[in-house]
Length: 487
Image (tube, rainbow, N blue to C red; front, side, top):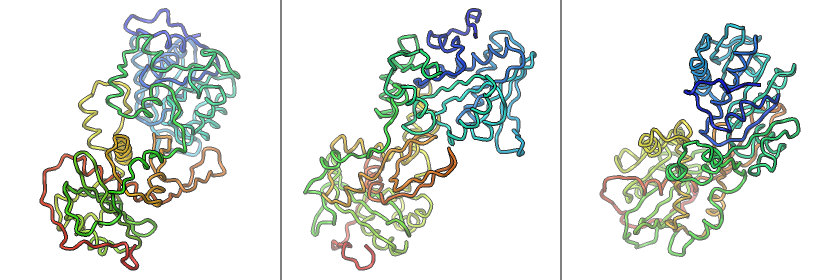
């Protein structure tokens, strides 16, 4: 059993960390809040074992190289604080019997022959070293089933397994393990007990704060502004899969007879106009959504769909409406850059390109203003995530007015929040095919959700802080709903 009694005063531990470190069970698992020091405690357990058990091997599989580096450097600090002796080897190429792959390992070796090795997780690195295994943030590992199959082989001769993670939706091997052990529905009745051969630990943020962890949850809520993320990251609630991101009740309460699918003939807008364009060329349509902002309410004035239309023709059709707007946000990802360039020629400063694959500048700036705040995942907030959150928040705030239309209803409901190994994505899954190998890559195709993203982009344009621009209205209103061959 790892002993913490002789640790230096510079290494204070909370009770839940002590309980985890001193639990010498062969198999143990933790569902835990973010940023409460569980990886810190797990690293300390491995270091204590290496200092007292000759020729021990601990392999740590983390979700990314950055996390594996952080884990091993934390372990090295443990050793230094305990005045231990060890050698740290950074960024070594990793090889297996099949040769070198693009994986970099971090390694600590001890005078007694013990070693602690950290690697980014994948099925091949998981098979690298027989010995004790740590799956750090296992819910966020890609190919988790194949990694699990490899790890169980490596520990077959009596070695230990440590599995710890914040939840990441109802998917992956971590979720399967937790469901089997009764860890997916809040704190289990028998916490810190042995269930089906596993020692279980469930620690949410309330328990951690009560034990001295200095997380300010009101600050976290104000910063994140998403109850689902807060509940999953801090309260150990597995995000349910399959529900529509925009539920029907939010869509229905936004439907209003004053909103229109086509630009009303003879209408003179009272407020500023904003547009959103989701670009498609072959499989999907290009969708244009036009909104008028009156007070703080966004009224839909037109929803236009262009199917199988060359980009040059799309630009000709859309340009009169883009000129009406104060700002139009357009999906400039991939082939979208072509339509963006065409529209930007005569509308420079009015057309705002949005890279769906990029990060959200607004969220990045928020994080820069709160650099010391713990509990927020590293990495940028993806643009599609930010768009999806903003449009839902706008519906919840009763700031949207949309026309009643069954097709629009269906497309707005099509977007699902889908947990993945690297976080969450927002898409409209049509079908998902599992490969024959456990943990193999899944193949996905997507249903139409062009109107959702055009809707979200128009609201994004309206909420952006931009300088006032001149607005040019077309001389006569035109309906393209009857434009033969293009709709």
